Image: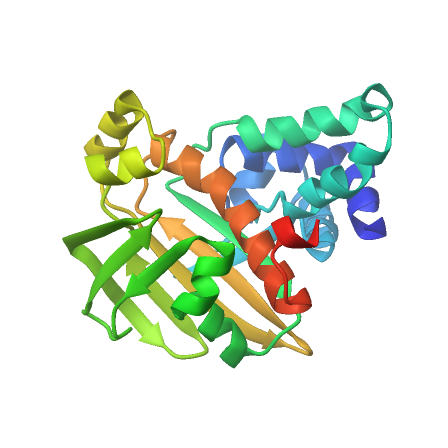
Length: 263
């Protein structure tokens, strides 16, 4: 966590995080223009932020995009703030709240985490019902082949729709599928209000992509949820849901227990 504290200590780096929080997925050129900082300075600050894990990158064609990854900051809040008086940690708590609650203006949400496991084991955790049910509460019915249909089972409700399909399936490397259908039955099973459901139904179907990359004794997992409208209900839901979900996945693979049980 020392790297995170060091990264947050510099006001220029905090400005970069603010900029990405306001509009995620920016190029180096866009960050330089928006903050009126020299390119070399921005590059150095981004390197520190990336080393600390609070910024992650992804290539889109020939452009390198930068994304805010609030997971390390959330980890500080989860592991430290609860042990101290809230008023004494007010500044950090305010930063955590801002990162979690500010609506994202990007059309995609990108999250990266490093898990001490193997690509084979992580693939199992992403696809096999025995795994997904433990940390997600969801199971999938599919053969995990590109173009195949997917049925989602969650809270006793099975969601089936022609638009729910596997888009890519390269075992141990890359998995992509369309997001589930927001049906009245799904909403009722998950306690989603009617007005929220109406907004979800009006938005385009999104997709989730999982990229697995071995890094030493760990696997770098990058989740990209795209096809979403800026400021939409879906982007607000996934930006809050994925960090918690993948944190539980990481805990399960590294300890054998989910976060709820380990606590």
